[in-house]
Image (cartoon, rainbow, N blue to C red; front, top):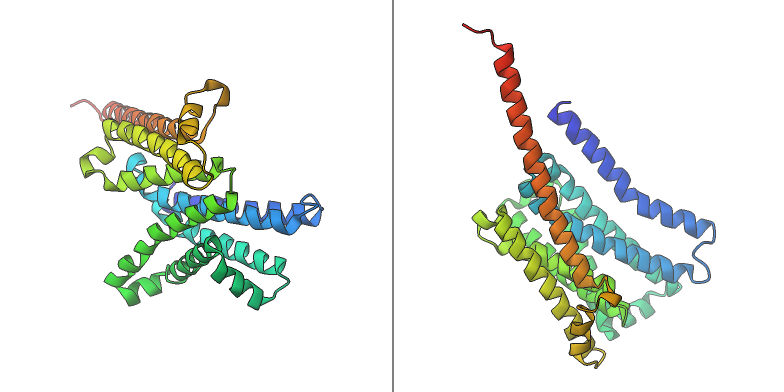
Length: 283
């Protein structure tokens, strides 16, 4: 299979994967599976998928570097645009829930902090999606890359919005925050450590402890609970898996996947070398 064919099938598989959550949600809504609160459940589902695809788009750069597979760069843009589209659907369903009363919507956005930052994230993602084309990249030149640095603050405030909207059930946003921390710390690592097993192990530890701290601080500052309870919960096996445990598992799976990928590439090189040597006639 040629490189162009691999890119074509990867793009097609990505497109199908990005559409499946929307199709599944629409089908469940049509069949009444979202009752008794279909609008609320659809709002939360589209918001969740927007954050998932946003984090996944940020994961494409380290994935390309760690797995040494350039075709991944061809789907990063699609995933980012999908995150913006799901965020737009999230907002439109919320407007539907307000019976399309834009005055009420605007008032709520101004009054409620989590809606304010969510709307800022939506505007940022929409701007990035619109300017993601090759044409805009040529028009903006160096400013294009500067503009698309907005993805990092947009992701940060989207996760804060996720935390606030989840209220006391913060397992999913805490897990997401841990993954986001991993991705940001990877970018901050020196180049020699980004592909090094020691660097990946350091990331696993840092992201895991960061998740524990996020969870403890949130319960303390927002819910007024003793942060030690959250810390103790992470070492109580009866309460596993906690968000920090999931982040640690995800980090270790990355290390395992990288090791398998490198062993496969090394084996292919050895096999190719022996095959070439076997096909060259002896002098």
